[in-house]
Image 1 (tube, rainbow, N blue to C red):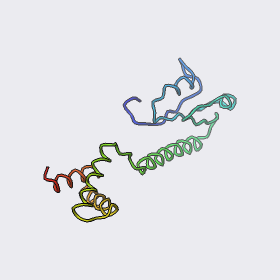
Image 2 (cartoon, one colour):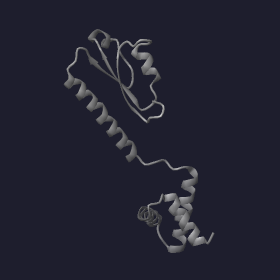
Image 3 (cartoon, one colour):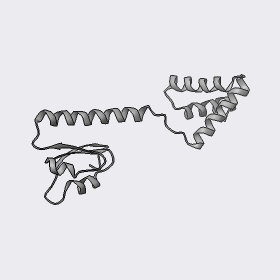
Image 4 (cartoon, rainbow, N blue to C red):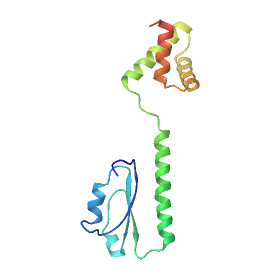
Length: 142
């Protein structure tokens, strides 16, 4: 599990050497547990990243639960990817220097300089920081 970035562990309430809660506490980040147990045992269950199914269960319930958990993981990954990455202070400084240079040399507004860096970054398939570094190199000759 340590080599994986996430997954789903399906287990029963009691294992040979431990109960579900011990195993749940050891799960690496990105993993969820689907616990299959009696209705009485499920009433005592709690924990983050835990989904419970009462026994006896129907195969359709198991399949639907696994599908729900996996679809939720896909949604969470998409949401995480859509969030903009936080720039370091060094990256912010380089981008600001490039914008300042574009403003002074090319008589752009701050917004125009920012859009220029964004557009050029997207067209070249580079990060904003790399694009800003290229602008600084080209316009200052360093």
